[in-house]
Image (tube, rainbow, N blue to C red; front, side, top):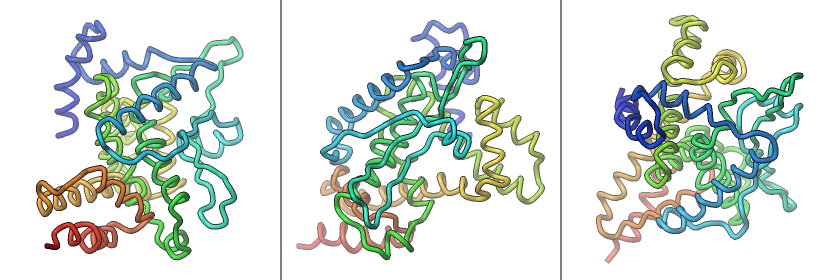
Amino acid sequence: MNIRNEMMALAPLVAAQKGFATSDYREVITRLKEDQVYGDQLMARYREVMTQLDVIIERENLASLPDEPARVRMATAAETAQQPAAHLDVPRLIGNSGEFPEFIVPKITPDEDGNWPVSDYAFPAMMWTLAAHEARPGHEMQFTTMLRGGVSTARAVFAFNSANVEGWALYAEAISKPYMPLEGQMISLQHRLLRAARIWLDPMLNLGLISAEEAKRVLMEEVVLDDENAQTEIDRYTFRSPAQATAYYYGYEHLQSLRAQTELRLKDKFNQRDFHDFLLAQGLLPPEVLQKAVEENFINPLLEP
């Protein structure tokens, strides 16, 4: 409800800026989706947004950027069939010989008549939060930092934790959101609403407390996903990866709490770039272990006389 209230407050501002004759957040999102980018221009727009996010990260002192640019490409048809959602192609952490993380966008193709579909991955307002999540300051920065700084075998093999991995990427959306254009902020809130919906819909489906049809209706009518992505979500909860999607919001809230605790302890000694660089340097720790690392190795040294 808190997220939806934010969306309801922002929707009239986006509508006024875009000239939409509505202030309902669902209708505003639907109108934003009408601005579709097709063919070769799609990857060009993603790269443009990613470049602007790099400028924001540096200008606002959010984190230290890697030396090389983030990479994005469209998936092949086979890759899209295997993984129909946008994701990061993660290279091996042990024995890596120069492979880089890549942000992968599902393949979008015209139909037999040459008509392009309306896709949740092909409108500019969405690219801001998706790039922040999958590229920088999200997953790509997360894994590039580990590859550049090195990661122990124990952390690479045994410490992978979805709550920390996905929590960081959702947190990365949140720290980038204030600097996005209004329509980017709107879709960032929509994606946050989706992650909040997941923590209810996934367990409810698996406990038999809601039907797949009703869960899909919520995703399409309240979260405003298209039919394909709503069905992908249902498949994810029920057989692709039950319970994994709940990790996003859990990890996000843990990181928000950890930041609040750190700010309260350090007061004017808190520096968000240093804090974020420290988090990224830890690799893939479970939230409780990450909190201990921050307490012992980030907060305490700064408080020592």
